[in-house]
Image (cartoon, rainbow, N blue to C red; front, side):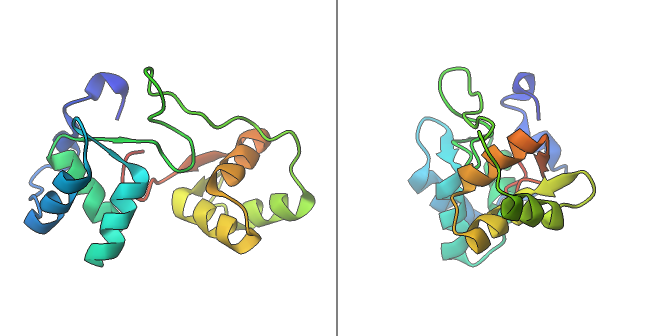
Amino acid sequence: MAHEDAGHYAAKHPGGKIDKALAAAIAEKEKAGQITCAAAHAIAKKQACPPHDVGMTIDLLEKRIRRCQLGLFGYGLKKKKVVKPAAMVTNNLRTAIRTAMDGDRISCLAAWEVAKKMGLTKLEISSACEAMGIKISKCQLGAF
């Protein structure tokens, strides 16, 4: 959702129901109505549920996700991205990213998998994608 939609995240899930266990876990980790991407994923792992379920509960609670692990949103006062294009992308990394793509984009999950496979950080993968002009889509938490 766009910045102007802030505070109306629940609208993405008409008829959605708040999971009480997830809501309690989110309440423990959130600060000032915000929760980090890493904390949301930690909750999903601990609760043995898909990250999307945590993201939906965050939306239904009208909380904001910040500090995307790929560097795409939620940094600083303007909530901008911190990822910058990589100065160089190796041929092996280019191939791994292109292989993981779905059409003209790579999903958040696929980017994470490439990072793990290549022994790189998530931010290094998003930086390579920026340099290659490849958009990352389908946030695991549903933020984008």
